[in-house]
Length: 392
Image (cartoon, rainbow, N blue to C red; front, side, top):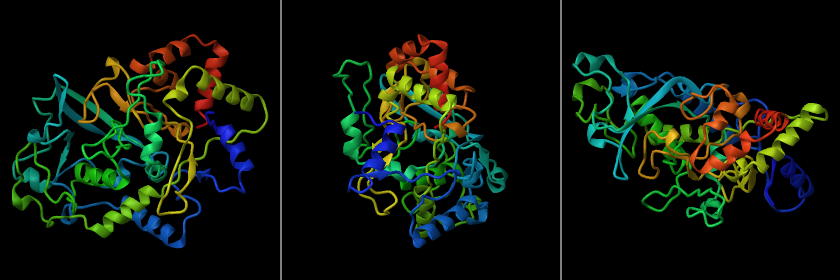
């Protein structure tokens, strides 16, 4: 049985006294910490949020190559910790004969579009797209709400939903994005980060230009080593304690609660839309719920998580192709979670869709049958489905 939002709520009420998983804690106000944190966990969340909003300077590690001056420059909508479109990330890769190159010798796949005054004075400006690139993409910042819950979902939960060879014949062949060491990468639009700490480390290095204890060497400008005198802060610039606070902040951000509708025609339409969501096949990839396992924080452990994603890679067809990763071909994307959808004003990884209907119809590849079913819906059912999405 698939657990939809309304079924989850009923199941939790029935099983409130049992030892099974409980409903994931959510908040009505985006950007708040998970309910149920201990005083110590909440204190770490607040300290991490202060760092997340702090303006960085070159004297303490910003740059010399960077895209933003603080984390909240990119993650500020609808609240701090959310997504954002003000500073899109420019990516570039090379994909030839089925092999992906992140263009490491040319400076890497993340094009840093700003440079500190000292670097400019040394005759080196922001990076340029390497000439060897076969594709580029502008990517908007994803919302960070609920990432700790996503991290706590066991690998086995993802593997159970995978069907890389489409053995059931439904046209959907999602697969786990495995890293070379065998761990599953569930973060990033291409499934390229294993843990929240990895995700934060990557953002600090590529977006703000900080070196970290795991990566103590400055990024090179299109492959050219930077002069020593352009970076006043010794490496690594981000110490482990600060890194842990930032990671805790992101891990403990609560997912936003869905719109709560009582009785009436709108509520009836939303319930109908949820049924249509399943009937046309959206839920085959945008799985309504997954379940967390053990976690260091009680607020994250053994929770039913209504994220509307299987966290697997799916081929969305040539029309959606852009850059690649070692785990994902140009047309492959990790299923984007839909929770918090009602707070977004643009959709898809590049923010190019301005309506939910447009976002739905621009799926392809494995989603072709689903999109055909969506196109065959009557006006009432289509409107109900879109209204349901607007409640998430």
